[in-house]
Image (tube, rainbow, N blue to C red):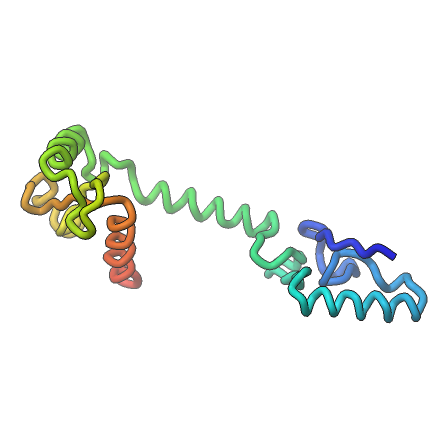
Length: 163
């Protein structure tokens, strides 16, 4: 007896398929249904299959994935965020910035945090906070990618809820 562990993408839960496998177990005789249930429970316990989650729109999808409705809502939200954010030039990263950035990296080739090769130039005071310091070399520091990502995540997380 083979049990299918494939999940039917975005099938409303109300249409009667099993939340664990997407296969129908109810059509089996009682003896086989019990065997199938025991097998499913064992596979589930071992972590070889995962229970599906039911989305807000009623779709049954594997944990960690999104149904087509959630993907569409996420794409719409992302488009709105991108439109509100503006272009890099509108945020202060124009030709003058790129020239200063190249010169600064040439003068300061190592990360100020860990000493690795610098690939980013970070504003100590952000352009949003202090636009007048955007092109001032004393407001800059060179950083490698991982250090810059950590710093940016920390700085931006402090501003959550104050926008």
